[in-house]
Length: 356
Ligand code: MRU
Image (cartoon, rainbow, N blue to C red; front, side, top):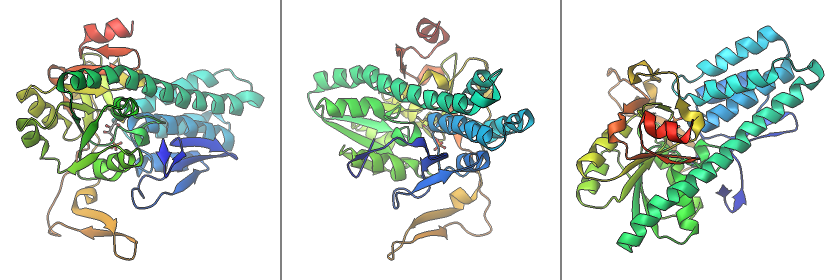
């Protein structure tokens, strides 16, 4: 990914510390932060300095490597693994990454355990980058098809940030967009603001600007009228957990966009690496839906005229607010799942064909 013309990944290990881009400061400040301990990693996930399902998986993997570096004691590693998995409950990538790390570390000699942990964390991140690149190559076909029919700018609507900031590189929903842009297909992206934390406005629009892709931020409720007016050709979103039956859990508001797309005959695609598939839970009612602090709704952060980040209250101070962070879009509203192995129907049969 490119920031001010320089290539970055969202997480890396250097001089015995893990480095991340602090996403709570974007788009106003670009700050690289160091994580020195597993607790730093847990905290970074909780307060969303890193966020997005694949990136919090990568951070959990490096977090466990930091735990090994601090204290290679089985009890400490077990406690760290549990706390990492609990740090945000909805994205399955956390448990997937921690389980993969633990499996790799079992039976490794103590003099090799740190290098093994660091290698595996890097492998998880490298793999995510490759998978996201392949998601882009596979999803490009959808955009190309629309472009060849329409012979004009392709309008894509996306929700939240399923971009390179949410992964290690490329993004999931944005990867087909970046691939299409590189091929010279004219693209315009409608970016849902994504209240309450505004990941669309703060992060998706920021990264599309850095890649010079035309985009327009819209209030979360605007997508419906744009679809009715024929100004959306396709919706592409990410996911934090997709069940083996094709039900998609993603940022709150995704479900309403899928309903509007269905009513207007607009294709609604979900882009995901296989690390986001939950093969165990069968009923979407069993997905743990994160409820975050209501301050994220009642307070808004921005930059003042002195370039200082300020937080202000926007609600009546006696009002209660409720902040559910995710919802579930039933498979019947999903046109297809764009994965690293190809595009699948959102159903058990479709996923089984790709992932035997
Ligand atoms: O709460 P966030 O910002 O972590 O939510 C992120 C999303 O909802 C993304 O769509 C999802 O993690 C997919 S990221 C490729």
